[in-house]
Image (tube, rainbow, N blue to C red; front, side):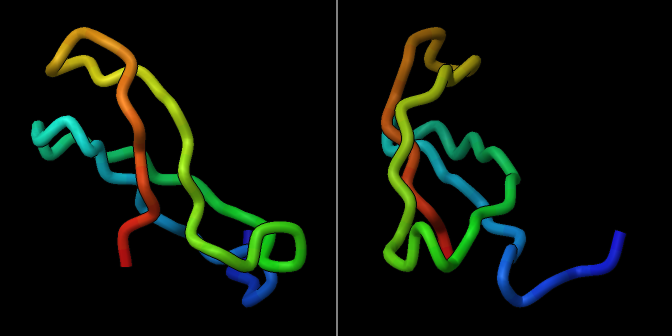
Length: 54
């Protein structure tokens, strides 16, 4: 699958301070700002806020 500028690969880093990351893609047309998601952090063993890391 070729990389596309419209759907870049981004890294989501946990704000719980554990250093855990998720890697995903996002659509720049729909989400031009930095992405913020609430996902499970296996190191903290609870749900945490994940912010897009650049």
